[in-house]
Length: 102
Image (cartoon, rainbow, N blue to C red; front, side, top):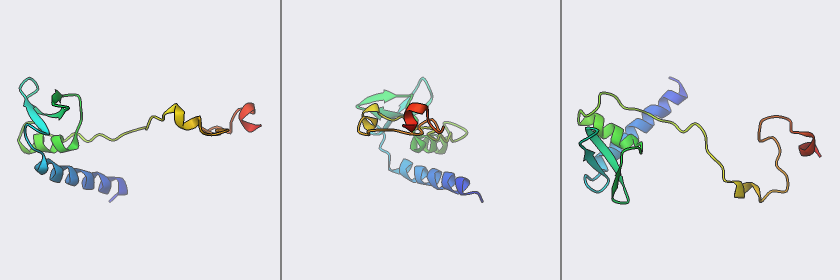
């Protein structure tokens, strides 16, 4: 098996276990409009938040026919982190512009 496939299986199994620990009305609620459980954030329903735990719970309860697995494709950085450096090279993957090479 591919290492990535093993990682996905491990993460789904972990999500399945965490789904069992979720508390209805505290961690999630049933959204009648969508016909599935949605995450609660600060006491409000947020149907746009993806959660592997809820994907597993919705699947287990028969509210959806498949588990959607999402993976973060990139991480945004905060500019203030880069202000701490005197010079930054190679952010674009290139060898750098003339100013960067000085």
